[in-house]
Length: 410
Ligand SMILES: *Cc1c(COP(=O)(O)O)cnc(C)c1O
Image (cartoon, rainbow, N blue to C red; front, side):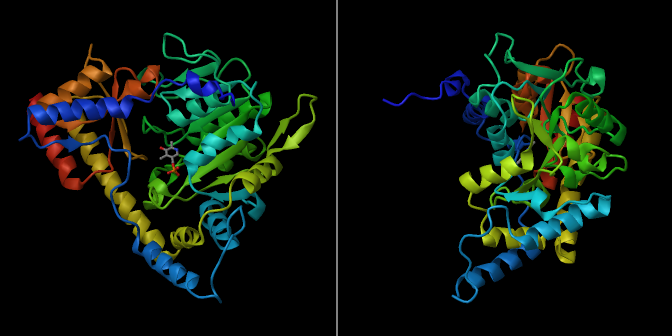
């Protein structure tokens, strides 16, 4: 009989969203007349930009004729998309990339989860806490996380707490780490780092030969100056960082599936003998072996995001979500809550009232005002005492929820 990868057995069940669903269902049975407002959803709700839909229709028609049919494409993605990415997402910010440094994929979850394939199991790992769970669970699967302890932390992972006390700025470790995951604008807290704050991480990585895994899935929500859109805006980052991008939250591609990862040629790791190896070469090899490319139709849809109409339509959708975020943020502040995020991000991170845990506050919000959030503790131990709300819902729901909150706290 084959032997399983026992690291998988160490993973606890992922109960956060099923526990929420159970509580919501129980509430619905007890109060069938109540109108629930879900402010916890982590998926977009606005449809795809029309420019993308038109591009997809055209691409489908091409597939219908032998002359224009496309079979397997390049594993790394088509040049038309890679060139559009470089010309629009990087060149205007002063970042020069080669086509060979961009790898189109089916999304940032796959890439952030798979990147560990090219890194040894003994590497030390640091994550911010609270955290997007993929970074931790994928490291558990590859044996880098150690064992789950009573306090909810993995024994070999270094947690960098991000709380109101430190302004959600993770403290740079005083020891060297091999791999550091950073996600900005952050999921779940909705907070950002300034250029100066991110530069400190790049300087740390360069001084310590650390690798930064930078998840910029929410880049398109940045509206303030001095918040870097790409880590490569920071000098030296090409030598120490891999960046992940996604069209999911940018352009509603959660169901279409497309993203990309930048692995600069300069970024290196070493062999156990100390020989320096290009991670670009390894990632290319990994993708060519285990991935056969994103569909042609999807890549044409992604390319259309960068057309003049596409850009305008994407901005309109993100503006809609950001206006939802503003309404919620102001509503909660007026009601006397401490709220973080929601400015360059679709996420709001709400401090629960004094003495109230994440789950207690979740229950109160559900039972008293029929609003559903996500308990912050579900994203890591430092999320205790917070609740995550998202701006991906309908405008009228956000307004109605804030009316109820205002009445509730009066
Ligand atoms: C949503 C999300 C992703 C992305 O996902 P894909 O849909 O797989 O591209 C990646 N990272 C974070 C932090 C996210 O919230």
